[in-house]
Length: 210
Image (cartoon, rainbow, N blue to C red):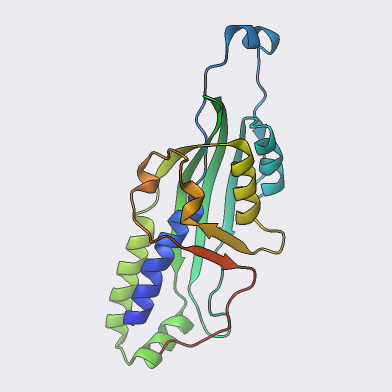
């Protein structure tokens, strides 16, 4: 179960990292405002990352909510169900950079009876011990809800980052270096991760807990 707790702790950090992205609104020059008095905000459908990336190409104001179960890391055995809801916004240009905003609106984990029994057997724990650890893990996930933050990106870098995050095959390529020089601020960034890159086009091979 120690391995399970360590894995969940790292995963929470990964989720928070995976959740980072969004821009803040900027004042336009008066002459530009006169030429374009109303800037249309693109409201992308739920999970429509292609729509959001198209808007990012020109730093057009846009909103997107991603509602997806997270990857199953061990698909051949009973596993928890992770659900994350993240809101993203492109808020326009400021000082020549594109402002990108992110907010983690839901971050939850549910455990099935099959999974509880599996952990009891594999970890030689009582039901009470397993349920206590799962309670602590779920609280750790939920404590991240409501965190948000704003970053300022060069438009090209933002688009490249989003294309890595939301790959066509469902894979993920996210690095702590994505945010270097992006002047990120907000509670979403109040955590520390080592410099690393996580690349995943397919879930890793199933390996039952040791």
